[in-house]
Length: 323
Image (tube, rainbow, N blue to C red; front, side, top):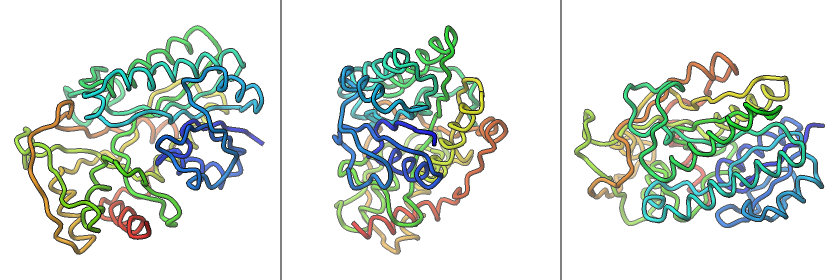
């Protein structure tokens, strides 16, 4: 049985991937410090409570459980927070990832799937964005992901270590069986904030910036359902285990929605005309991020099942009502 160690496996995306791995029969070990994750979100496998900044515990865990591959989700993920506190992001996201890569090399583990981000592209020259677009992040979060991607490429180039970097666009939605979803109280995902405002757990929704160079003045993003992201990780794992070479892939549905479009759709899905306030732009937000995901579709055979924005919002809404 193939064993996979999942860092950050108690978090939003990580827990969905752990569920997908468990359902496919993989033996999973979850390594998480539970700072933002939840132990009861782990539906399969064994939890080891540890921090990626603790090299000794990390290496000991790898030596003890000897995974065939590692999936790495343990990171801070808020763009605005990264602008306000860049050191927090550079220490955890970069130093923690370097610890993991070093421990993998010392333990002879040669496969890693990295949770990266479209934030590595910054403000793209062309939309939709291909994987060949310049890497030019405009915030510390994106920089932290770009640095780790570069380290992974350099290590792969000089050894038998292979990796896949999955550049997420906007992860959204919740488990279609209603078992998992976003739980972080300070979650910054737009769809999560919409359904929480509709439910009354937030007083209003802030829309940051209405003067972007877009049709309605608000940012445009490409939303990908969290279960489709989980499937991309399974396919990336199979790619590596079957001898595939190191790759970077965009994970998005190749369709953009503005903030106002998402808000209108969320009001339709929830049936609640929730209050909205308009605020100035946040630093570090690119105007438009929409993927060209043809590479992952061609190379890995990935095809999103849930690329309808109403369905994505509905899964988030059904999950939020259960909390």
